[in-house]
Length: 342
Image 1 (cartoon, helix red, strand yellow):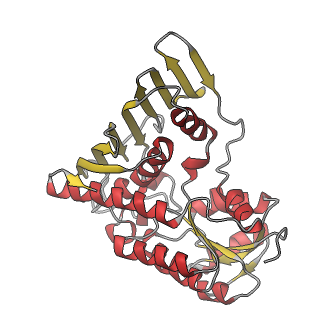
Image 2 (cartoon, rainbow, N blue to C red):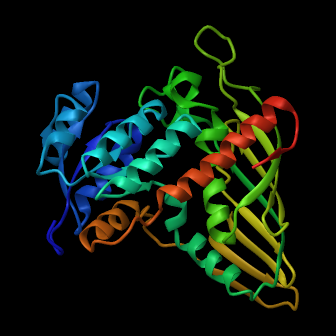
């Protein structure tokens, strides 16, 4: 690709996350062109092609074989993320993949290896890294203005994926172990395992957890086979302790916040509807930072600009793999009832 040209990006998987985030952002981007769509239900791809333009592909492999396509955004169910990512990288297509990167650590390692060998790169769609509040929080924490981080408390909880999915029912693939993995641990936990590592600048070393299915039932009235609630205790490389609570059973306002308790004060991120980031120093000083007026994930533009400028991946495959290791350790801790070394 010639530096300065806008990369042509195809969409693989035309479900809800593609419809509400990636396709609109790609269509508006000044840094990329929309090449086309594939979905195993052709009508889903045809609807988006009619709305935004672009080619409809009969199979995702046809998109990967198309020399005019520079990269792909993978928005399929979790069970195909790893396979399609590897195939795309082997054809030197740039990959932006929805989280998680795969359904197993073995397959995740295959993605890392394919990324290492490819002329292109892999990027996980860890959108929480790109919000202004999380970026500012990282800057403040890394500046040591707050002193040492002593403890964190984090929650990500909403009504459940059936309220966001295309079919708006508990038959969604998100609530099926074969296609999604570990329910809220995979879906929600991967976000926070990544963004907390990002803000702190260090990884996790051990975890204990409890998890269960307390709420979600299928059409027959049986509990679904994935976790809908989980509570975790984690420790980082430097000894920072913290809690992570994940839930599909929050029928009030969504919670997406984290507190960092530090030597010199408290940092609160996304714990107030009107204020994205609050800094409260123990000497009484306070500062507030407001999020952007028109929320945008910035993921597509970040991906496209990295391709355009011949830069490396904004979220390296190895970083995504480390977040995956934490998620699988949480599941192991919950399943076995013991503390797990990561």
